[in-house]
Length: 79
Image (tube, rainbow, N blue to C red; front, top):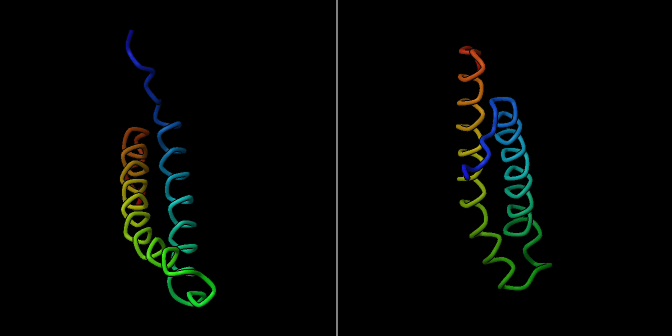
């Protein structure tokens, strides 16, 4: 049995959701790691610093997925 495949609209939504969630993760991690660091323990601050590049990577993946979905839909001017 083959796994279900996403159509272009679902892929576009997946890319957008990935970008929004990872953007929120970057904001939260940045707040924990920098301006509000004195309110958090060392472990949480380290986690905040580690989450920043990971969430940035997911943001980039979401952007590429979104561009691929636009390409599949025939929208070549999406950026």
